[in-house]
Image (tube, rainbow, N blue to C red; front, side, top):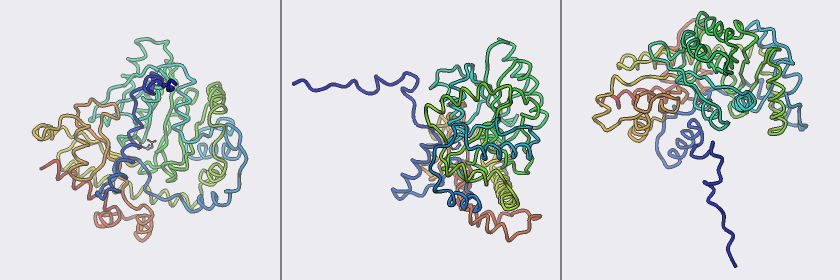
Length: 432
Ligand code: GLU
């Protein structure tokens, strides 16, 4: 009897997926855990996960809603959609209503569906978060990376966008702008946003404004570009970063009325794929977006810790001669280590990938190479996620220091120790 013969799976894979690996952020996390299981000491500056716990009021709400078992509407729980719209009215003065909101199992999934239903080129700054480009390649969209430089905070400019649009003015385009930025920790000024909005409007570019780190602006001064280009901007946010709930998987998109046709197309795909977002999580999210004193206080302390820690790391790297823009929000830095290029070459390190691998092997510090964010392979850039510390402990300790006072070195070495030890190890390794 002839044995059943299967083609090797590789051959039957969709061409757009063949050769792709799992997302770099998740791989570095799993590799770090594997090394820890093997007994290695690993400093986890790879995955960008909030170090802080979910606020207790939101956890309580999840407990109280564990019994919610029904499928919810595809676009999301009505009450949550209303609360999200109100939140953006309150914090950004944006005139959204419940109808404008779509809830999904993480903003990442919503971004994928957006790219699937919207037919146009993807425009992203270089560097950008690791998943925008792979999503576009899986779907088969053309990707246009916009070059940036460390000296301009890794930001794109309106002039650049204008030049691109002028080259083929009627081409449909989707620009993703993420600020405060993953991977850079910088954020666009109001003037930069206004200028970008002007060009986007002129050429009818659909803008996806990824504001997942908005609440983690270190000085609580986040401004949405939707204020300047409301009719063409989809705002993206979720619970993962400011609410410490990455694993809960809850993201939201807000659409202007002019783009409800995109919302409707996305709802079709959602209904045929994930159906609706987890019911208990949506009920708990109502509490998160409702805000109030307790959540505001939690955010104030989270920002304070991140602001002080980010600045100290930035200062340390600068003192060591590394080029790195000052962080303004979130929990990332994207340094350029090229001042160490000659020393790295002598050690046989020629790419950012080798840089990250050798650093991990020699010191236990896990971070992500710049190449995963679109940077040239032979450029010594990397993303540092300064999140390897016990956020609950740090929050409790910050309570004992008046808000008017900065959290000094002593505090940071005590409560964010692993992260700072990792930075010291990184610098010592560079200087070896
Ligand atoms: N956004 C986080 C990061 O960049 C992790 C989540 C993810 O990539 O899916 O590290």
